[in-house]
Amino acid sequence: MAHLMIDLFAGCGGLSTGLEQAGFIPWFVNEIEPNFCNTYRRNHPQLSDEHFYVGDIKELNKHIEEYRHLLKDITLVCGGPPCQGFSMANRQRIIDDPRNNLYKAYLTFLKEVRPLFFVMENVRGMRNKIDEIQQDFAEYLGEEYQYSFAILNAQDYGVPQNRERVFCISELNGENKFEFPKSRELKLKLYDILEKNVDSKYYLKNNQVMDTPIEQEYSYCLDSNYWKGTTLHSFLEKHRRQLVTDKINESGQYIPRRLTPKETWRLMGVNEEDIEKASFLICQTSLYK
Image 1 (cartoon, rainbow, N blue to C red):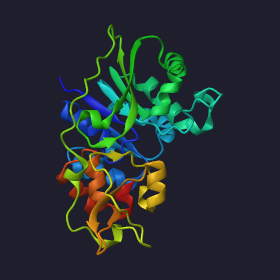
Image 2 (cartoon, rainbow, N blue to C red):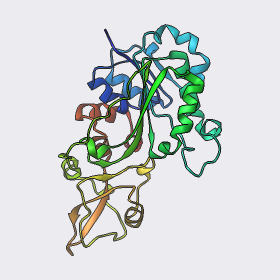
Image 3 (cartoon, rainbow, N blue to C red):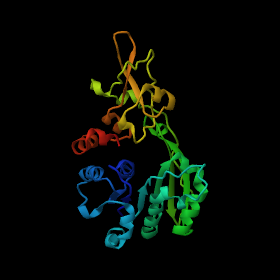
Image 4 (cartoon, one colour):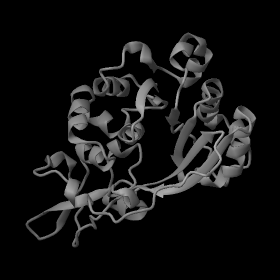
């Protein structure tokens, strides 16, 4: 039996790559950014155009009947809806927060498809709202799903990035909680994925140098604005836009640089072949996103 998967907020296919490796088959894909969807298409030539909805998931929900023939017998729906309202300081219900309209659209889609399993991944702040989220699930999906939540860090599973995310794995008519995999020793380090002979444009200017090198065992989490660049001060203060030191000036000081687009993709666990495919379709700035 084929385990068909629907990939929502798909991007270039980062989240679903691991699910494919586990045996799930991409069947229907939704992504609002055309360039990202083109990369997904290139990596999945077996999928015809009708298996892609390029646009807002809210519009997809309005026209769901047109795709109903593709949404039957689905084993898994996965997605990480962007949600700015997952915060302890946010006192209103997250389902009512207009910033979380994509989260609401995700629940609407699940209600229509009712897969055997669904996976929702999001920022650590989602953990603060688990009780509310379970109430929302019950409101939209009824009481038939068994929910399991965990905070997982990428560096505990073989990827040299300090990236914490909340995962919810839900099973229709499930009897037992999902057992999340145990962490393992990190063998691949940040310095293992760095390129050689990096272009000078990635190095910081204006005499931003260091007397000691930056720790390069693992990366701090990269935010979506990494493509805008960073400063030495902001990195040392916030530990967000990762810098590395692989070059020394004539005075013996280390010159920091930001990661290249290829290095950021390696940090997400993407293989070299898929990185090359994406590089042909997406400009260097967009590769950061």
